[in-house]
Image 1 (cartoon, one colour):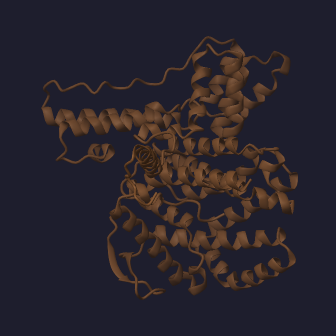
Image 2: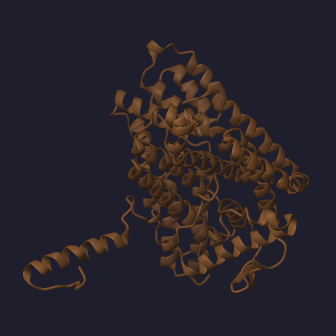
Length: 206
Length: 281
C-alpha cells in the first residue's frame, strides 16, 4: 500500500496549496513526456492514476467529504487515427510490446508501399527498444511525409526538443544552458565599457 | 569510461553535497574492506551513482557518522552507519567492471601500455576472483556483454544505436538485478539502459580524436559524424529518454541527489565535453 504523502513528496504538515502544487509538479512531468514510444507507457498510466488517487485520498481526509478544490486532473493518453488493417495490427503489437512480431510485419511491407505510418511505427519500435537515434530519424521521416498528422508531429517534436535539453523544462529548469554567472559578468563588463565611454568607471581594473 | 556520472555541484544544496560525498566515502571504505587497498584507488563516481540510485529506492533509513579519512587524516568524512547491501553490491560491480575494462584495453593499446595493463591485471586478479564469488550474477552479465561489445566492434558497425547496445543492455541488467516488483524492475531496466547508452556515447565522443589517430573503433567516426552539434543532440536525447523513465520510479530518499545527477549532472557534462571538442578543432 503506497503512502499518498510519500508519493507526492509532502508531509502531514503541508498546506493544501503545497499539496496541490506537488501533485501538479509530479503530474506535469509525466504528462509533458511522450510515453507513446516507451515500453513503460502502461506504468506511466498507472503512475498518473496513483498520483490522482493519492491527491484525492489526502484531500478527502482533510475535507471530510466536503467539496474540495479541483486539481484539474490530467486525462489519459489517447491514441488513435483510422488506419488500414495491417497497420492497425502492427500498432496493437507495438502497444503490447511485441516488438519482434511488429518488426516482422513491418519488414513484410515492400519499400515502395511504405507510407508515413510505416516510418512512424518503425520509429516507435526503435524508441521502445531504446534505439533513440534511429527512432528520431524515422519520426522525422514520418513527420516530413505528413506534417499535419498530430501523432507524427508530437513524436518528432518531443524527441527534437530533448536534443536541446528540453526534457529539463518540466522540472522548472531552463532548456538552454544559461550559465548565470557568465551572463552576469557579460552584463557587468558591457555596463563597465559603456560607463567608461561616458567618463565613469564601474569596474576600476577593466 | 568512468567518472562521467557526477553531480552538478552549483545546483546542489550543501547538505545534499555532503550526503553524496558521504556515500562516496562509504563506498571507498567498503571497497577497502572487501578488496584491500588497491581496489580502493579505483573508486568511481559511476559506482557511487549505482549505490545512491539503489538506496534511493529502498525504505531503509540511512544515518551518517563522522570519522577521519584513512587516506587523508586531516579530512573528516561522513560514513554510512551499519551494513548496506547497496554499497557491497556497488563495490563488487566496480571491481568486476574495472577488471574487464583493463582486460579490454590491452588489445587496443600500444606495446608499452599493454604491458602495464597486464601487470595491473595480475595485481587485480585476486580481487576479481573474490568479486566473482561475491556476485556471480553480475560477473556473468559483464563477461557476456564484453563479448557482445567485441562482436559489434569487429563488425565495424556505423550505427551508434547498435554500438551502444551492449553497454546499454549491461547496465539495464545491473540496475534492475534482484528487484522483486515487476513494474519497478522494468523501469529500473529502462533507466539503466539509457544510462549505459549515454556512458558509451560520451566516452566515444570524448575519444573521437584519439581514435581517429589510432584507428580504433569509434561509431561516430564510421558514421562520418564530424557534426559535434548533432552528437550533442544525440546525447541529450538519450538523457531525455532516461529522464522519462526516471520519473516513473518511486524515490524514497536522496531524490535531490539523483535528480541533480540526471537533470543537471548529465546535462552539463554533455555540454562540457561538447565545448571541449569544439575548441580543440
